Image 1: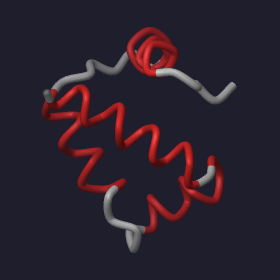
Image 2: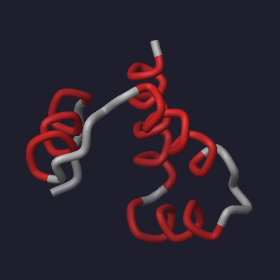
Image 3: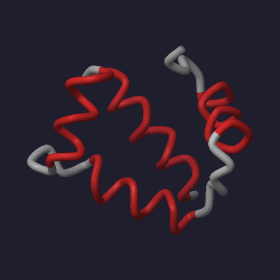
Length: 65
């Protein structure tokens, strides 16, 4: 299931994936996901779509603050 809300995504990352949502983590992921030429970003888009990528970027920006 693809998370549709920030809280669902956060729960998935923290509880299922066991990843700490730190500012450093958010910064590292944003460097990748905001670079449309990055192969990892292109793969993400092909698997989950542009809209979900934008959701993830917005949610990561929340973590940065």
